[in-house]
Length: 467
Image 1: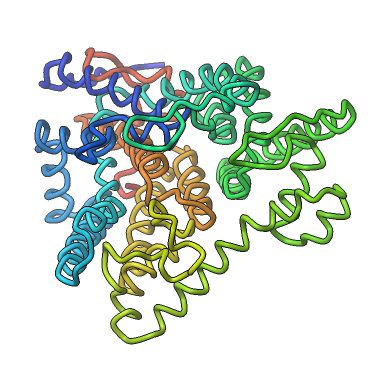
Image 2: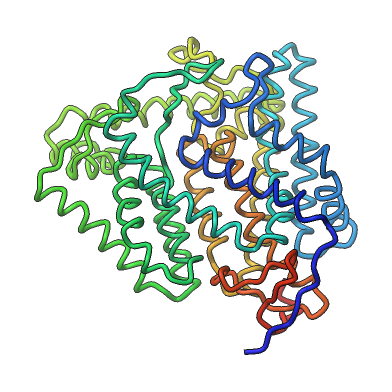
């Protein structure tokens, strides 16, 4: 096989290498402990790690955001649709902040709502680093997988009982580890030798079920199916399904029954896990299966959300202003339901559609889904060039999860979502920008050369119309 040298970037290595280490730390922290990690920062000033990182990137490396953004706005290209919808989204978010403040809502709360529009800027940080470290995405997945195998069992056994609050919040320092399904899908897609990771994937599968997050379950089903269809690997999809079923069967045979973390309720047992899933569709069937009063709790976590969603829908129909542009950022959305008035920290209805509708009306809903369409178009173009469907699969999984949880409007979900998307897209854009327009296989990133080190990439031309 022949290789073509890739021109090294002029940026000094040490500058972006520090950023790559920081981003790896950021991604692992959010992925392992979620909301807990989000509270690192300066609590009295309401400045936390995700906001501080983005602000530092904008002020220290402005050209890495504005150069590709402006180029995409003026000249089009693969980033064109995303660049325009992102500009519209941020502009609309700023309008909603100004409107909310003028209406008398708390400015700080209005600014907290604005992150919904701002966090997609993390795509540019991911693209910048992805161009220079094509291996960084796989590196993150591997490090996350190893640490998940240690932290997730430890959390389920004893860390969930240790209550030490993060400074400036009532959030426990040890948060529940999610992402077991993400680990399995990512290792199968990105690692050149996924079979060597089967112990980690087995533990990830257990953690995926034990976390008992139904939105994540559904999201990973959707994402895995999309990967299987686009990659023509439905046999592997069937094997994943069979493995999950076997894990549940073994748990039932061995009568495994562990106490669930307090915030999840119920128990970690095969029947309870199946009952939790069924409770969202047919509570009576779930009750017949387990014969446990826990089904009422499982269904109750859905009931309060539906009540809030109905209230948001009714509020949007009150007048044409609410219908089109909503009540504005800073509005106390929880006040629409009497039972939630006392929940001062509750700002999201755990559904991205109702979040956008509740705060910013149907125009906000349209802008958000236009932004997601721009993301999908970009990922589709990368798929057409590389044949790698990981980006589309994870995007679909994340968007699906966002309809059942606070995924897109919180740092623990949104920042890794947009950042890994950029890390995935960056190497393809870098290869297209090289003199020889080398073809880059994201399916085997370990074989990808590092342009900044004067490395090599497999020879082969991209089809110029594909991206």
